[in-house]
Image (cartoon, rainbow, N blue to C red):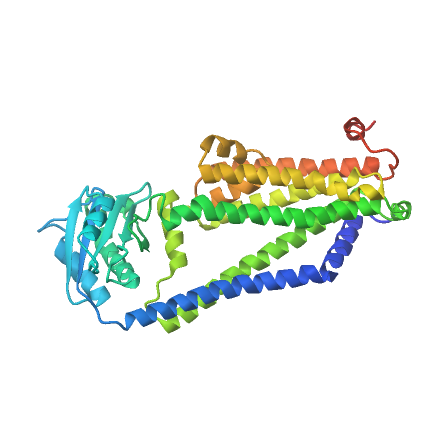
Length: 453
């Protein structure tokens, strides 16, 4: 065999990558999905800005804000914070004719909204709401807009933004300067309180993000994992295998193929992520050119997630840990795919190699997803620390701050150890069975190969 193990692996890796790039399906799917992500985000932001701009041309209205205070903030005449100051700030920010502010301590927002809507009849109301709640990291300001409110969503959002500096100043002076962080959450278009289980942010955390992250891992593993399994199995049962082994070692063959599938899938994911970021940035520029007062709903949802789960959500460290868990999960399953291809003994068994990877992926994805939907903390906790299920659960949970940075580091360390072991195991099995042919392998035989017998 010519060359070092590193050089042989590099050769197999380069050849496998070039073969993937030559496939039209890979290139076309990468480009089309990237354009879809970019265009979809851009279009949503541009259309939303255009809609808000048309609404802004309508005449301004009088308004009544009811503040449901569930925190330790005090608003009264003669103090640092008064209803008159809040009204002036909101009136200036929204360019409204008249605004009145009612401050209610310990009021139940659902009851307040129901009372206002019950008195409506068939007409509109000029009343909207704000809910102030204390969180672990500061305070949350939740703006609520009744379904039939004559105030536009953008106006309610601007009112919330105008309140934050006054509330923050009060906390800095009278409570604790370190807790003076206010996160304003999206305006609700219905009789719901943003911040509870029915909010946009809660729905994003509970349903959408686990589904997106789980589906990404699932389909990437199926696509690339099956390709690796088929490639390894096809070469292993080929008559050219003995010739190939005169140039490249078995370890270099299997490692090169696994790493090629891993790197190409990571590149594809990063291209799609970059497309999404690009669509968001360009869409934001265009949206603000259409309407300078454009409300960035993506930022609203991110802020809402931080208010619910903690200030570390969607920041740089959780993003890095989340990507680490995702990518280690892909490499782990690609190693399993390599093992599936290694145990094939006849050409007609190549199709069955896919089952080795399909069933574990499907089982662990469904387990993690339904545990997230049902909020079964016992199952979720177990899934977080199982390397095979962590990519389907912990990837989303660390991203939104549902689990701590320390826990995320422990999960990454566990996955790294398990992934390296599975890659080593794939090489061990492939090396022992590379020239094996004949009867279908038994589990006992595979274990014998691993033990060197």
